[in-house]
Image (cartoon, rainbow, N blue to C red):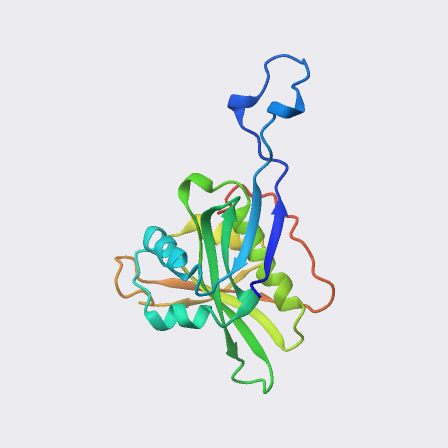
Length: 203
């Protein structure tokens, strides 16, 4: 069964449908608020994920990448706004080399299509991963690499509790600016918590 998370985003408004006067708009002509669905990656939508990645990232991902993300359950999601695919987050689970029986989550990709940014879609996807990690007592942290000049992404992750812990020289091979920061969020276990960030740098 393909489990997915559904989030109703009631804060969306369309200026073209906003009445300039205080008169009441009949409910029958008020467009419904879009609904966000976070769906697991599987054979039925993996081609959609490939198309999103081709649009979002200057990197070619191998067939093994797409096979891997179909097997991590809640740690890889495609985001839909109603029925429109608009973004994705893909992670892998790695063993902690110095802690037997412990694991870490590596965020391989996280992106939202340009027309759908500034709607907290990136926040919802990232928070879903954090919540899932908190539910598993063997997971100790979440980490990823961020290009050093990508200040928007660095600000986004900082506002969600990630810290820069190292500089990886020449991490990127096929782009001009090759250096990356390693950013990490340590996981505290218990009830999932929601980020209160009000950052406008959301994906």
